[in-house]
Length: 209
Image (cartoon, rainbow, N blue to C red; front, side, top):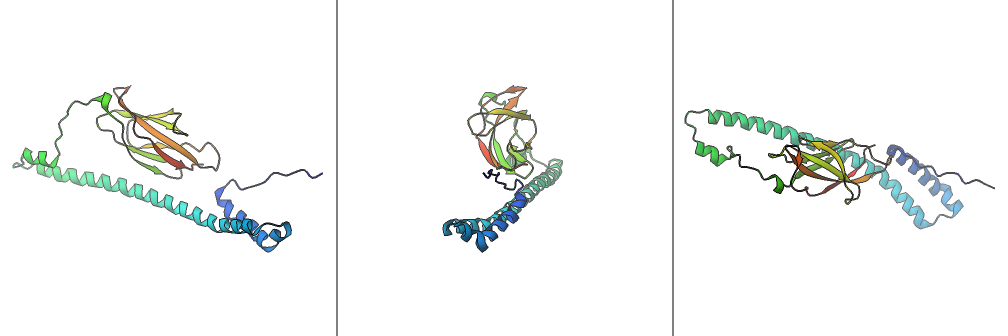
């Protein structure tokens, strides 16, 4: 009596194309006919054999583009702020500078009292990379945020506290080599107290191994 052996499938994504290609080749040359594999199933395997290297390559390229875009954004915003501060400094130290112009430009802001209980945390962006999920959030006059996460969008747990945007989630996936959906929401912290309302929920497909 033959003992049924376990089915092996590569756990490392990079090994899948070669593995799949070898099986597809054997099916096409002799095994499909030998074991009566249907034309429909053979066509399906051949289609996946073509798709797999393409989607892996595209995902890698998209990740590189996302990383480059994030770096460009951060560099551009930082350089723009530095340049503008220098220009504004020259303007405001000019003996003839008029405060009405400062008001028109919006560079003077009244420190109006905030209303913590009405504040709603705001996530401004999310970037998924191979080693982390970057969550950009708006700090304003608050002192920080509580970061909560969920795998189903219903059951939430505390992930961390953050007092400086962006927040970086570097946790590994729960299942090895299996993508997972993560939901995130934030709530403001003011004077060491949770205040206001939760942010809108954002979610990401994450593959950190």
